[in-house]
Image 1 (cartoon, rainbow, N blue to C red):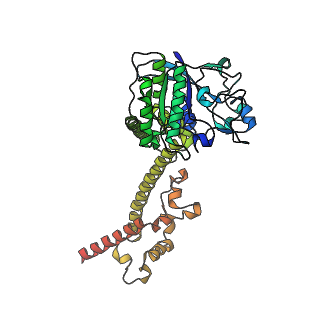
Image 2: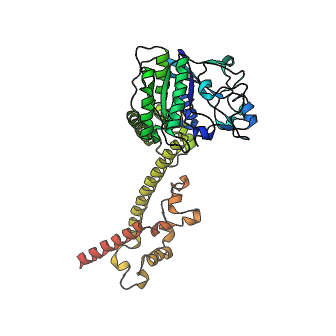
Image 3: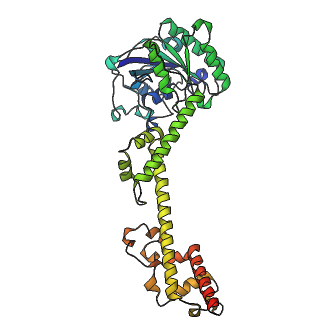
Length: 433
C-alpha cells in the first residue's frame, strides 16, 4: 500500500481576509477522512481561546492533523493517505491570528513541505478541544509530516465580505509557491452544490494559465453532498505516483447524477430489505436494527444517510405495518359486526325504524346496542381496558378476545355495515311481500 501525505490549503485568515465563512477546507478533510454521514460535521474550529490553541490537538500550530484514510483507485491501487490542513487560527480575545514565533504570511507558510509538532493529536471534531482524553487519541507519527502533494481549495459559492478577485489572487499566489517546491497540486473547487457560475469559470481560468503548462488539474467537489471528494485525493496520489493510468474526472453535474443514482438505489434496496425482514408492527428499533445490521445493504445505507435516516425509514415502515394491521383488524371486526346484526336484528320485524323514533340517528342506534340485553355477549368496553380499539389491537392479550370493542361502532365503517344490513332486510321484506 502506497503512503501519500497530503496538505490541504486555501484562503485563510480573519474575516476581512476570508469573508464571513471559510472556503471549506475542514469540511473537505472531514468528508475524506471520515466519510460516514454521522461522522460529518459542518462546523469546525477557526476562532479559539488561548487554552484550546495550546491544547494537544492544535498544539500551538496553525495546522491540523486529520489522521489517515485508506482508499482504492478505480484501477485497483490501494493508497494510505495522511492529511493535514494548513489554516490560520484566530484568538477569540483579540480576533487576530495567534502569534507563533517568527510567522511567515499564510501564502508562503502553507507551501511548507516539512512540518513538525511533537505529541500533536489527530483532530476529530470541534467538541474535542479541552476534553481530548474523551476521544480517541492518535498522535502525529514521530511528530513529523513530509508533504508529498497539495490539495488547493477554491470556494465557488458566494460569501459575504469576500470578492472572487481576492480569492483568485490568494489562490494563485499559493499555487505559485507550491510549484516552487516542486510538488504536485490539484485545484479543488468546494461547495459546488451552491456554485456561482462566474466563480467556477474563474477557477477554470486559473488552471488554464500558460505559466502552469497544464500542470494544474481541476476537480469540482461538494463535501456536504459527498461528491468527488475521494477522487480529488486519489488523482493527486496518481500524480505523485506518476501513474500511467489516471482516474477519469467527471464534471460536477455528472458526478452529482451518479451520486444521486447511488442514493436512490440504496434507499430502494433498504426499503425492500425492511419489508422482508420486519413484518411485525410491534417491532422495536433496538432489536430490529441489530437484525438489519447483518445485511450489507443496511450498513451501506447508514453510512450514506446516517442513523437518523435509518430510524425514519424504520418508523415509516412500522407506521405502515400498524395501519395495515389495524385496517385488517377493522375489517375483521366489521365482518363480526355483520354476523352480530344477523343475531340481534334477524329480520325487519325485529325492529321498525320508521315507527321507532329512538333510531333516528346513528348515535341512538349505538345506544340501542349498548343497552341491549345481549350486549356483553357480543361487545366489550375497550376504554375500560385502557384505550381505544386501535390501541388495544396492539396488545397481545387481546388475541383471544372474540367480542367486538364497542367503540368501533363510532367508525363510519360500522354505520355503513348497519345500513347495508337494514337495506338487505328491507329488500328481503319486499321480496316476500
